[in-house]
Image (tube, rainbow, N blue to C red; front, side, top):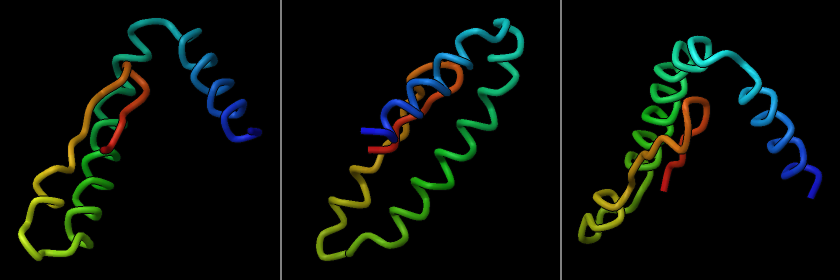
Length: 68
């Protein structure tokens, strides 16, 4: 539960940043998420390749990304 509060606190702090600052952070967040997705694809088993193909990156906001 503490991790969720910590994450919420961090995201709230990012939301308080001026729009220009959030927009300048976005490329780094996207790059980090893409690197994580690449690692997940690399480590995924290759039986049929469906798992590797299903890994996606979505930007949730200017400062948050989801790898699924």
